[in-house]
Image (cartoon, rainbow, N blue to C red; front, side, top):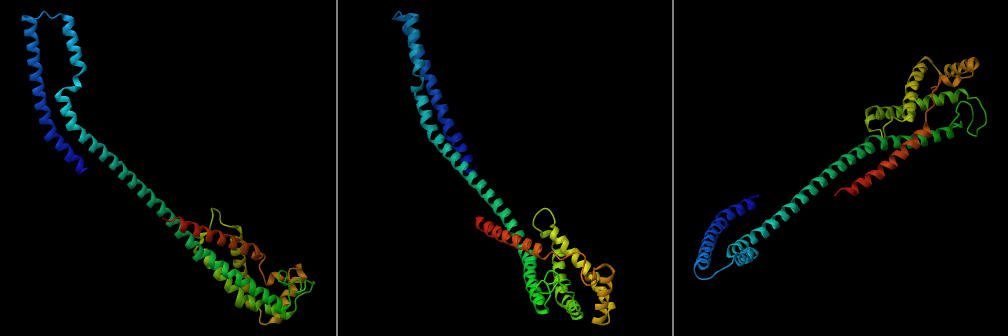
Length: 286
């Protein structure tokens, strides 16, 4: 902008006086020529009107060769060249500025997405997936150790043969649930409730709803266990319920099954996808 103002001032200071000077000279020269032509026509030579028209036409056709026009063009041409150069430079600078703004805006959006993905991984999906892996391994080891079915603890033994649980099977279940698995579930519940906004997608997953429902019900079931003074009392409660409606296991587990396989698959899929997204967004940052 400063350069443009300087050029404008230069044009006013230099070009305008020159134009006025040349214009006055040109006007004087044309006046003199006209008077001379008139004198010649009136005194010496009999010049016809058609001849005068031809002379005037020739004069008009060569107007651009007059000293005024030539001098004016010589003075203005450099300024026109400079003006076009400045205009081109300004347009280039404006384009660079716009590109820089767009690039920064794009990077800012990518950084925001990257921050959210990292928060999802670090505060939600990675901890839940780790707890899921640990829990699955511990439960596999426990089932094998006590000789009971992993998926049907109260109905089958480890080999899949139908076999009712014994008193020590009930006692082992209560002990490991109280000391190992329920504390793990409490950690899961805490993560989901405190970081629910980090859930990936528009809908809250059904598998997380089932998990929270299972944990809440299990908390109520474990409150009943306080009534049992010994493993024998617990085993008696199982048999009593079994005789009543063949659902003795509901004295020791919730009616809503824990969605172990579904939960693990969901967590692994989300974790893997978010890790890929994180890598992709990081590479896009300029």
